[in-house]
Amino acid sequence: MIPSPIAQAQNVLDEADIAVCQRVYDQIVALKLIETDAAREDLATRIIHSFQHGVKDEDALLRLLI
Image (cartoon, rainbow, N blue to C red):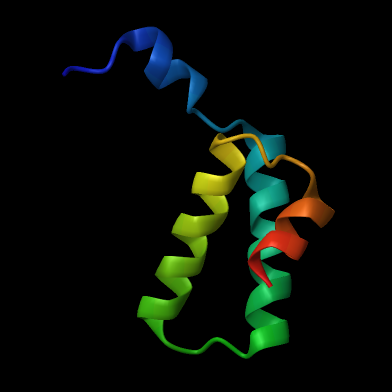
C-alpha cells in the first residue's frame, strides 16, 4: 500500500517537535550513558515513533523511554 500525501504530512515533525525529541534524546543519553551508535540510533527511532503515535509531552516521553 502506498502512503497517501495526507498520511505522510501527519508524520512530519516541525521545529518545536524536533526540539522536544532532541531534549528527550539528550537527557536519556546522559542518564543511561549511551555510547554506541546503534544504541543511540535505536533510542532516536523509539523517541520519534512514540512522538508520532501521540506521546507528545516531554515528561511522558522521558518516563516511557527511561
